[in-house]
Amino acid sequence: MIADPLRLYDCCPVSDGAAAIVLTSESLSKEFPPNPVYVTGSGQATDLQILAERENPTFLNAVAQSAKMAFNMAQISPKDVKVAELHDAFSILEILESEAVGFFAPGQGPKAVARGDTEIGGTCPINPSGGLKARGHPWGATGVAQAVEIFWQLRGEANKRQVPNEPKYGLAVNFGAFGNNVLTHIFERGG
Image (tube, rainbow, N blue to C red; front, side, top):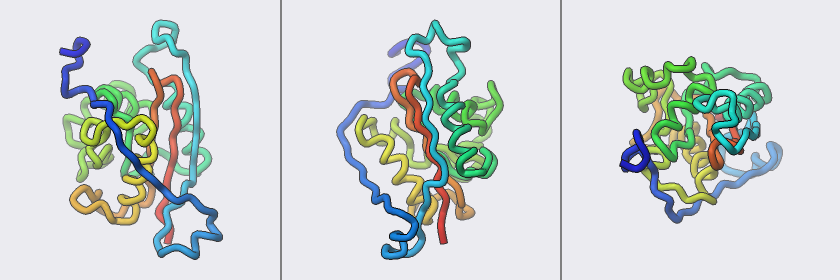
């Protein structure tokens, strides 16, 4: 037991690590190999640090706000996203974030996981990389590692982790502290 009800394997280890991406303008992307991936939506939001001061401590308002901004910018909805990397430092966060982003209605996240909806072959694959619990949590590299995984997924280069049916859109949520600083990015397969 770490903190009831969270047990050891509900919590990711803090680790060292690195990740890198190359960002460029659309016009310069023509100089690179084919099959670009575009960042078509971004959002950032904050929330109160002290959970007891939040209207509902089990709803991640900053996730919902940042996702709404990203979806509006990308001009798509949660149903268009076919692969996501959610910040799962603790197992409960994947479920709460999946609801706040709009993949599932509040309270339906656990049922979606139990049905297999969030698995690689499911209707809403989440964390095909294994998430932070599988790779660890290198604080400075976590968000970029999520973007790299979505890049590989959208290009069909994720090997055994590849989500089927060539997803066109992917989403990444990077979560700071107790959800009081959240970034959401939406990626679109080019070509």
